[in-house]
Length: 105
Image 1 (tube, rainbow, N blue to C red):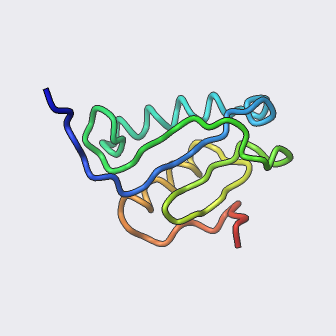
Image 2 (image 1 turned 90 degrees about the vertical axis):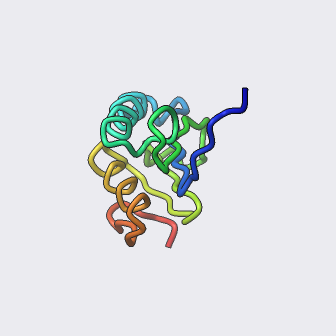
């Protein structure tokens, strides 16, 4: 049996390394995943366009949780569920990414 393929528009990496985890990254990941599934944005199971992956340390330990959005290459610090969901929605809809807490520029 061949696996189902859904086009992927973007990939979100959320750091769940020790320091980001201490700042709530596990909670952000869980609630963000639930929201992406609920809104039909999650690639896995729902056929949405976004992938969300837990990452080990992304190297910005002072400012976590850290979210990295590809293919934009956008980095966000101090990520909350609403902020991460706004990034995800912008990627899905092809809008400009939010600037709040962005630190790659």
